[in-house]
Length: 429
Image (cartoon, rainbow, N blue to C red; front, side, top):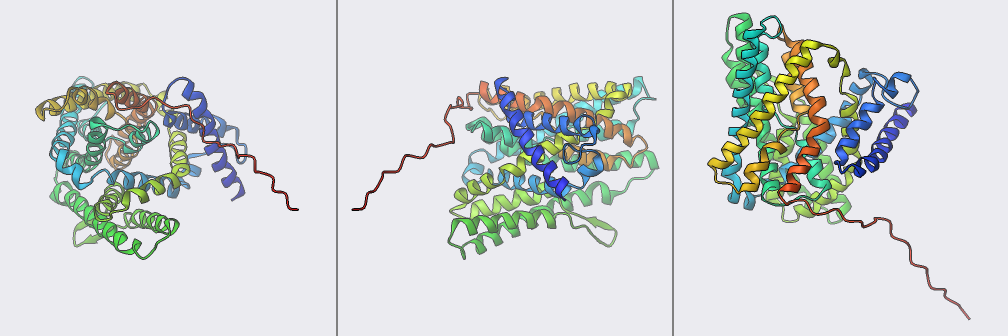
C-alpha cells in the first residue's frame, strides 16, 4: 500500500511539474499529464522497476481502474450540467442535428475508406474489422475537451455547442457501434442477432438515461436537508460515486442482456440535478474544485496506459494512419456540413470539427468489445495507436480552435499565493 500511495503521489506531482514546462510551449496542461503518464509508464521509468516510482506493468494500472472510472464519472457529471433548460431551448435542436450528423458522416466515410483498403489488401484488413473501426471512429473523448475548456475558462457559442455535441456523441456512438458490431459478427458467423444489433443498445441508452434522471432528482430532494456547503458538496460527491457504481451492474431479462453506460448515467445525473436545483451552479463549482487532483491522476494514468508496442507492427501503422486521416476528415467535414445546414455562425462552422478530434476511453472500451472478432486484435491495436496520436495532439488542436474562435481569454499572470499581511502589534499596558 505504501508503494502504491507513493506511486500515485509521484504521478500527480510529476504531471503538475511537467505542466509548467508545457506551458512555455503554449500547450494545454492535459497534454503534460498524458506525457507524464507516458514517461512514468511501463515503457520508460516503470521499466526500471523502482518501487514507488512509475507504473511497472499494465496489471498495476488495471488495479487503479476504480480511480479512473470515478474520475470519468465526475467528468461526465460536470458535462451533464451543460444541458440546462435555457440552453437547450436556444440550441438544443442544433446540437442534436450536428451531434448525430457528424457521427454518422464520420462512420460512413471511415467505413468507405477502410473497405477500399480491405479490397486492396484483403490479407491486412478484414471486412468485419473495417466496419467496426468505422463505428468506433464516431466516438469523441469528453474528458480532454472538458479539461481544455476548464483550464482556459473558454466560453461562447462554440464552447457551449461543443459541450452539448460531445455529450450527444456518446449515445450516437454507442448505437452505431452496436449495429456495426452486430453486422460484423453476422458476417463472420453467417447469422444476425436482432437483439444485440438493435434491442440491447437502445435499451442500454434508455436504462442509463432513466437511472441518471432518478439519481439526479433524488440528489435534489436530499441536498435540501443539509445547509453547510461542505455537507452539500459531500452528498453530491457520494451520488456521483453511487452513479458510477450502479452503472457497472449487468443483468438479463430472458434472452436480452441489459447494462448501463457510465458516461450516460453520470451525464444524466448532472443534467437532472442542475435543472431541478436552483443552487446547483455553486455546488457544481465546489465539486469540480474538489475533483481536480483526481482528474490530473486520471490523465496521468491514461498516458501510462498508452501501449507503445503497437508502433512495432507495420500493418497496424498502415491501417492506423489511414484510420486517423479518414476519421479526422470525417469529423471536420461532418461538423462543417451539419453546421452549414443549421446556419451556425462562421466561427462555429470553421472550428467545431477540429475540437471533436480527441479520442480515448469510450473508443478503447468499444475496441475491447471488438476483440471477440477474428481480426479483433488488429482493431484494438489500431484504436490504441489512434488514441496515442489523438490524445497528444487533440487537446492542443482544441485549444487552437477555441482561441481562433475568440472564446479563450488571455491567460492572466495572477498568483494564487497570497502573502499574509503583517499583524499589528498589540501592546497591553
